Length: 392
Image 1 (cartoon, rainbow, N blue to C red):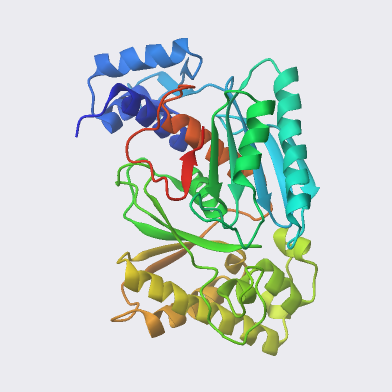
Image 2 (cartoon, rainbow, N blue to C red):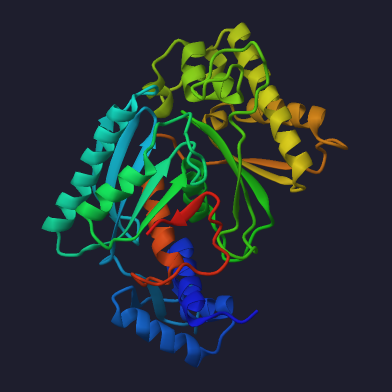
């Protein structure tokens, strides 16, 4: 399929973002265009301050010396609601965080409290923009439970219209993208783990203060992400209350809140990775954790019954238990997945918890890049507007 010029710009920027820069032959091979065509677009992007070209020694004798990377001059902003707080940040396309701040926003906060916190976060971004040398090229907001067609969000009482109105007043004409938190988390994983050739489709699972999942298909058009509402599958009708208002959700059993309660330590310690050694746990507690992971595995198996992929990547605290966690998860998968889990590959992602607003900034970079780096360009074709769309 032939790409438009905008889509080609977006493909080049996306490749450079995920690979953290590239020698020109690799880039040309990825977009499957002639050297002359890629050179014209790179000249255009360089003139707009979006890419840089430097001389670098090739990894092999006689190799290319021109290395292309994203420019650190362009800045994006993010607001990320996560871990009982609202996080604000400004960063560059190259991943440098220039400014960040956090304000508590506990679960169960009222609509008024939530909007006050968001208003403060917007003012932080506006203050940075007024005092900086570069304008913000994109703002992204990451919200658990967000969907543009949902009239109410049971996780966070997020006022989409009010938030967009505040942003328009504070940062006029700056494009805004709003997405469910799992979109931002999955983009962060792809940024950290993206190889230089597309991977086979997989299910990305995040287990932190919230629990979510997304199917990822690198070869699909658009962004290749499809949200799967994993954390609010009910596994025990009379189980503990969940912040969504139901009882017995997966999240109520395996979130960092639930794990901290089980271990008898503060949740911030879990988020910071300050965990006891598995060998120091009482056998009953270790058995309970493994039982909960097996239940999570059954839910994952049901997800794979709905969509036939055979790779699962899990980010979050289960990596702490290593092989024990993997065995428990695979046992649950095997109990629910049609024909068993013998051909399923399950791996842990090294993405640490508690790195906000990194995921929000990744979402902002992705939204900017998907527009081909143009401030007023329409969204590239294939955009999945069911969960993440450029709102203005």
